Image 1: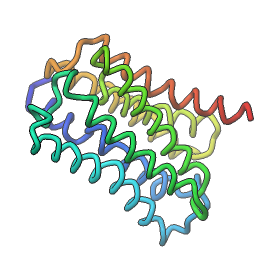
Image 2: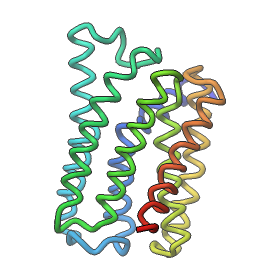
Image 3: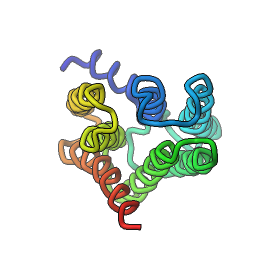
Image 4: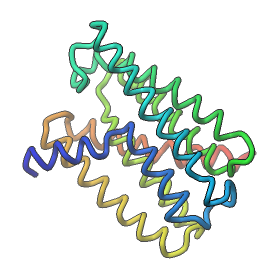
Length: 208
C-alpha cells in the first residue's frame, strides 16, 4: 500500500471518528435495530457522539499541544499518548452517561460504554506498550457488526456491514503497517482488543 493511501485511510478512520460512523450506521442504515429515539430525532444521538468522542478529545489534544505538553498532534511516540487518551476516556464516559438516559435505546448506551472501556484499556496498555488505537477502533466495529449478525438483529443488511467492517479492518491495519506506525503485533493486538471488548461486554451483560 502506498503512503498516500495509507495516510488517507488513517485519517478517515481515525479512532476518534469511528464512533460517529458506527452510530450513524446503527441509527440510519440499520434503523430496525433500535426503537428509540424516533428516526427524526436521531440527529441528537449523532450530535452527542460527535461532540463527546471527536470534538472534545480533539480540542483537548490541541490544547495539550498548544501548552507544550505534546511534541506532535500525531502522537507517534508512546509517551505522548496517555494524557490525550485520558481526556478521551473522560469525554467518552460523558457520552456513555448521556446515552444511558431515556429515551435512548439500551443498545446505544451499551455501545458507548464499550467504546469507553476500549479507550481505558488502550490507555492502560499504552503506559507500557504502543498498542494500535486504530486497530482497537476497527476491531470494535467488526465486533459490533458480528454481534448484530449473529443475533440476526440487523438482517441481511447487517451481513453486508459485517463484510465491509472486516475489509475495512484489514485495510486500516495494512495502512498503519505501511506507515510504520506500529509493528504487526501492535496492530493485531489492537484489533483483538477491540473485538474482545465487544464480546466481553455482551457476555457480562448476559450474565446478569
